Length: 180
Image 1 (tube, rainbow, N blue to C red):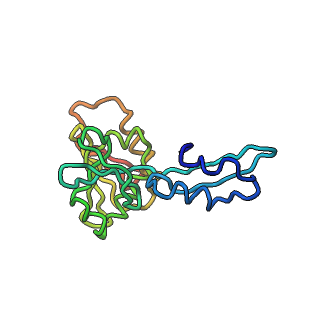
Image 2 (spheres, helix red, strand yellow):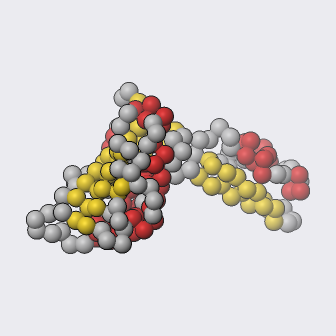
């Protein structure tokens, strides 16, 4: 980003706007917003808000990291290079009615839980389901109370392993999560 912002060097601080810095970073899909703050006499602080990848879509042989809005941030050659859940349907998945619901759920999860997911899917907006890399399933339900559901799931995942092992974590009612 420093290299991209180099053309601003030498410009009087009072003449540099958010839009000026934003234009220089416009070609970077990972940049969501840019804010500049002048710190007299000669410093300029540029604050960049990055888009956060929440899932992966398969596009032929490559895997596309996408943010909550379905914006493609980066392509990687191997599924192993993208420790995020795969949403089935390839690049067309972004056009499905359930896509915004799935990504809203994924965006609510802390990074440590997101990294444990293999797949994310939903038949309807009320039936989001997550598959952990361990093979266990998380029934999420709708995208309501996502923060509470994320906390409940994180707590369940921190519990010692049960015998027999848990196959389904149901956080659809976050104040009464169920395992089976």
